[in-house]
Length: 254
Image (cartoon, rainbow, N blue to C red; front, side):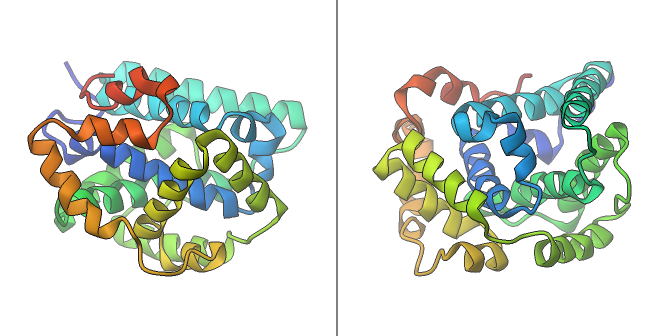
C-alpha cells in the first residue's frame, strides 16, 4: 500500500506528537492574525467564533493527509480545495494565490520550528522532506507560483513575511477572541509560546517583546515526557472541553 507520507518520514514524527502540533498552532495563530488576507477567515466567521475548534479542524485535515494512504490523502486534499472554492463562490471573489501560499508556507515553517524547539535540529535532508510533503499538498490543490525546491521556498518565505503581514483591527479582534476562549492564564501561555516559535518579523509586529518565560520550562517539560506526564501539561494549556482532542494528538494514525 502506498502512503502519501512514508512511514519512516520525519513528517509523521512531527505531526504525530501533540506538543509539536500545539506549537505549530501557536505560531500559525500569531501569523494568521497579521496576514493581509485574514478578512477571508472573518468572512466565514469560523475562526473568530471558535478559534480552538478551528485548530482541531485544521489539524484533523493535516493529520488525515500525513497518515493516510495515497488515494485517501488525495481525497482529503480535494475536499479541502472544494471547501475553499465554495467560500470563494459565496463571496464572489477569489482568495489570492499568495494567501494560499502563505498558509502552506506556515505549515512548512512551523513544522520545522516546532520540532527543532522540542526535539533536535533537523538535517537539510529532513527539512527538504518537510517541504516536499507540503509542496505536494499545494500542487494537488492547484496552487499557483509554488517554489519547487526547499532553497527557493526559504527565499519566498522571507519575501512573504516582509510583504504580506500587517497589524490591523482584525489582528486585535482575533487576539481578543483568543483571550476570551482561553482565559487569562492560558492566553498568557499562548503569548509566551508564540515568543518562542514565531519569526522576528511576527514578534515585532505583534509587540511580543521580552525574554520568553517558557524557555526555562522547556527542559522540565522534555523530562516529563520520559515519565508520560506531559499530558498533564497539555491539559493545562487547553480547556478541559478539548481533553479527548488533546489526547488524540499523540497518535500516528489518521
